[in-house]
Image (cartoon, rainbow, N blue to C red; front, side, top):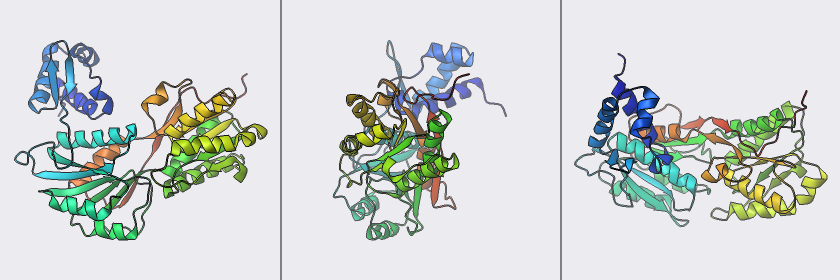
Length: 371
């Protein structure tokens, strides 16, 4: 059966609400009327239903805003009388736009599906046993979504999480954890695919002298990313010798940004002497540091060296030149994480990878010969 027009508008708005940018901007009534070629009455019916569901707020001269109540440890989005299911969302207490936006998307999927959320912030001393005890103490807790830091969970911590009689979702896991208990699901970007895709972007733009920079704690995702880069370059007959791999292993909670700068300063002579034209960086934030550091030493991006990273951030759109990155569909990852943690889906696979897509901007220069 075809959807009614107001239902199409409502579904579109629900999708917009899940996106982090919705806190700053939502489409106006006039924009919705123009987008869907519908009357004001149709748009207002969709808005009224969302208001009744406490998803949005409408105010004169302000317009449509997302109704997001703040959450904190021990405090839920909805009262227990309204929600029969609760999930714990545990994430690293680290100042990072990426963490905030992913937690936001998780919360919005929960709100739209009448699932209560209890947030639990982690510090560097937090042990998995504390997360397990916290989950056990929550009424009607169906599962846990764990956005862990760059460090690896120990075998003891995995066993502790395995004692919980509920699904545990390791969100954006950087480790494979092949021996994890059966209640633990690992959702992760496809790092092998991502590495190959970054290499492909540079190759497609005529680059043949390429470097790779890693300045993060050692993990399976970085290993797979480098493997993907090397494999794709080899297929194209392009070498990636060890001298062009600038790798710095750091400890969890150390600054990968500081490590990026140090690595570049240490290898400026290599970049110049080998006349590298492209640099693949493990993350978008580190790519920004690479962009700035190279410029400080007279190596302009992209005139001398093109830069590409992984993971889109707001600053990628505003630095000059804007940064080319690959990114993963974290909305899809957030939705699946909620469905698994709430017990509404039980995938056969315990490790699920999500593909990347390219966000092309000006930091990659086209070197292909022009006719």
